[in-house]
Amino acid sequence: MKPTTSLAIVLVGLMLTYGCSSGSDNTEKAEKINNDKIDKQAIAVSNDAKEEAKGVSKNMVELANSSLTEFELSKVALKKATNPEVKAYAQQVMNDHQQDDKTLQSLAKQMNVTLPTGLSDKSNGHLGKLTGMKAGTEFDLQYLENMISLNDDALDSADDLRDHAPNDAVKTFARKLLDDDEKHKKQAKQLKNVLD
Image (cartoon, rainbow, N blue to C red; front, side, top):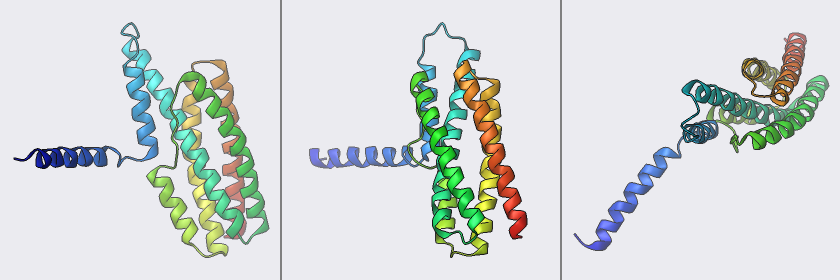
């Protein structure tokens, strides 16, 4: 076999390998990076401590994705929502999540936790569906339904993070998220009931 043919086969193999590994979504990539970092820590760290650290980093990754998703969906709602109260809600969600995201980024940096740089595949699906909808009551209802679901998931992650927080700063942040997301979920339900 010619050297160029061998090189081509190796390159195709590398491209296929890279293509398969890069197929995972942003949250999965961040979780893998964090798990690898934790696994490479000193041998003196117990397996229980490593598993707890993995749980904390997973919750932070999930919350980062949730926050970004809520922000992006709300950005679309700000443009397309027809109900003024839904528009005001979308603006409030964006404001809250900008603040929460800054805090989360800072905590992640301090703890050496990698956060996703973009939306998960599931979140991109929600965003694509919402973006493709026409403005109107159906859009408003779909946006609010997404917000209820997202906040349910975020509440679970924030609750877990609070329970396993490695320090007071993370615990305080988790409590704030629980308050914010509970408020967002309640408001979305109220608005949805009015529009239904």
